[in-house]
Amino acid sequence: MTDLHPDLRAAGLPPLDPPPSALAVGAHPDDVEFGAGGTLARWAAAGTRVTLLVVTDGSKGSWDPDADPAAVAARRTAEQQAAAAELGAAEVLHAGHVDGELEYSMALRGQVCEFIRKVRPAVVLSHDPWQRYQLHPDHRATGLAVVDGVVAARDHLFFPDQGLAAHRPTALLLWSPDEANHWEDVSGSLDRKVAALLCHTSQGTTTMGGAPDGEAARRSFATRIENRAAEVGRIAGLAAAEAFRRITP
Image (cartoon, rainbow, N blue to C red):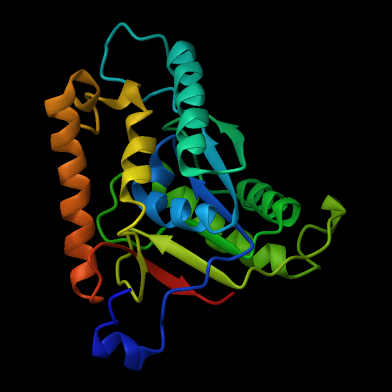
């Protein structure tokens, strides 16, 4: 691994060792792969038990005016399962909320808390709810529910009716951070990130520039992902990286 930039060494935030377990929470199918796919693939290859939690059903993920939301949701669920296999994830969980209609609530916080207490991950990853100008309401609601759910999960007096033991993760990593303070080396796992993203063929026209349509488009998409990882890694002295806001619960 390339040495960290001096400013990052001084901050005392080296990459984490691959944890024994990780829970990555995305608002929609493919959010986890975009935000932390390279990190999760590297950890999974090193023995981390990776669990993915998708909060909404992805039913609005189409620009086709004739698309049936139920059919879109079913297709995206299958795509997420295939993508998880590419990452090496052990399990995919679904919270089942309607895409585009997610609202932050105590019930949502409790649901995320329950997932954390059941999975008992060493590291939790999700959207940064404080990212400036984050347009999608589902991303904001999911990120906030995860941050608050981590707090609830660690303290036994929150949601005692769940009948589950409290659990405190060792780290919370928020992707697409407003202010990054942690970088993970993905130079050896970008191929898995790209392969996982390409499983989401229903999103070819919405987020991937037609990548499923042919080899040239796939290569162009992969290059975009690689260039972004190189840009993110540059500040950390890494060939390719994913950036996070790291919080100790």
